[in-house]
Length: 333
Image (cartoon, rainbow, N blue to C red; front, top):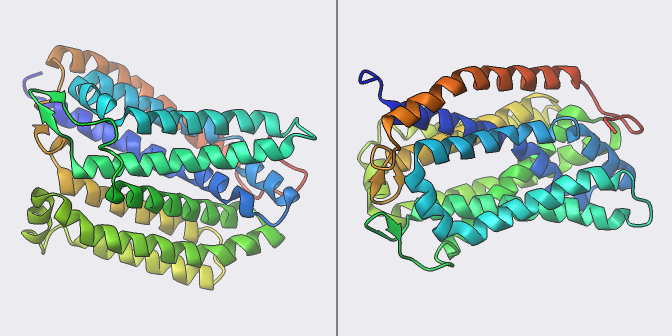
C-alpha cells in the first residue's frame, strides 16, 4: 500500500467519472435545453426518444463520482456542501424534474405542455447550476481550519453566472450535434442550422472566461503564464476541435460534429484541471490534505476495480443496442 499514491489514484478515478458524466449526460441535458425551440411537437417526440434509452444510465457516472468523492476526500464534502448547498439543491431539483418528465410526458395528453416545460426547465436549471458550481470551484472557497466560513451566496458571482451560461451553451452544442447524428430530415436540418451559432456562443464565453480566470486567482495566473510552452497546447487543441466542428457542419458530416464537440469539452476540462492541480479545495487544500485514511481508500478502491469495468461494459452495450437513427413514431417508449 505504501507503494501506491492512493489520493492520486482516486483523483484520476473521480476525474474520469466526472468527464464521463459531462460528456454522456451533457448531450441529453443539451437536448432538454433545446426542447422549447424545436420545430414542432413531433420533433420533440423524436428528440426525447434519442436520449430516453440512455439518460438514466448516463447519470450512473454522477453517482459514481459523487460517492467516490465522499469516500476518498471527505474534506471536500465538508467544505463544498456548506458553500454550495443552494447550487447543489438546484442541480438535483433540475435532474428530478427532468427525470420525471421523461416518463410522464409520453403518457400525458392535455398536460403534455407542462411536462415539456418540466423537461426543458429541469435541464436548463441543472446545467446552469453545474456551470456555476464549476465557477465557484475556480474562484475558490473561504476556509479556516478546514471549515467553510463564507456566506451561503458566495458561490453566486458574476464570474459563476458566466460559467453557468457557458455550460448551458456548451451542453446545447452537445445536444445539437447529438441530434445531427441521431436524426434525419427536418429535425436534422434544424440541428445543423443552430450548431454554428451555438459554437460561436461557446467560443465567446470561452474567450471571456480565459481572460477573466487569471484575475480570479493569482495562482491560476502564474500557472498559465509561467508554462507557456507546456499547457497552452490545451487552448490550441480546443480551437482545433472548434474548427473541426465548423468544417464538419459545413460539409454536412453527421458523426464528426458530435465527436469534435466531445473533444472540445475534454480539452476544456483538462485546462480546468491544470489550472487548479493539485488543489481539490482551492486555494488551500491539496488532494493529499483532503484524503481519507489509506485503509478506507484501499478498501473502496478494490470494489471499484470490479464496478467500473461493469459500468463501462453495460454502457457500451446500451449504446450499441440503440445505435442508428431515431425516426418519428419509433423509439424506446
